[in-house]
Amino acid sequence: MTDIKIATWNVNSIKVRLEQILNWLKEHNPDILALQETKSLDENFPMDAIHAAGYEVTFSGQKTYNGVAILSKSKAKDVLSGVPLLDDPQRRILIASIDDIRVINLYIPNGQEVGSEKYAYKLDWLKKVTSHIETELKQHDKVVVLGDFNIAPKDEDVHDPDRWQDKVLCSGPERKAFFDMLALGLEDSFRNFPQAEKLYSWWDYRMLGFRRNHGLRIDHILISKALSNHAKSCIIDKEPRKLERPSDHAPVMLTLSL
DNA sequence: ATGGTAGAGGATCTA
Image 1 (tube, rainbow, N blue to C red):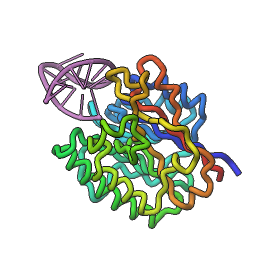
Image 2: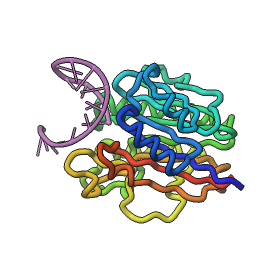
Image 3: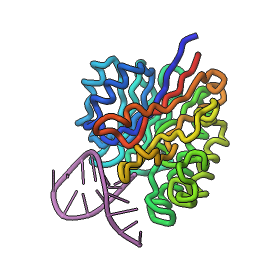
């Protein structure tokens, strides 16, 4: 039996957060770390620093916005930087096999505001990606779907459910899309374990969001049934959010005993 | 209804 640690972190610029990422890798030694919002062209991606830290890396980036990457101890295989159904220039999805685990790294669109064009794009994106995940689940036994979902699944994942009721990130159609994805045969690994109340993964930079714990749990690690029997813990690490110049998101980490 | 902050890039856009 060996412990495998799989983590996700929306870093909001890999350039600004590189030192924090390297420190976090050293401290936690994850086997897999999925990143979102790298905001970097592939030609500028700091792969040398990541290799020097003992990690392989695959990435799919663009200028200014979005961008995803997967860091791993073992080299990624069968990499997909999009899904066939989704003809989308936005770099929001990266799929790779790490050893015998299929890793699906998502940066789900924010949606801006319920009823907006971007909200419609989010729901359409979710529908198409969920359909692709169904295909992946037929081909692979051990599947992890993780990333910044930009969806708080339930009111318990929201600091002030009344204020957020039917707002973007918490609306009924977004939550339905989340549970439709779970219905393919995935589990929200965080909720497979007893957790304290009011644990969140994102806090707005504005209005002292972190200090007041005005947060949402929108970063998730979903696991297929073949992995859920082996899950030992799933935690949110708030420590990096306390640093100077933090990302607005905290890392989430799953430990498996395989 | 708006604004507050952060990042990229060089005026806004996205979140």
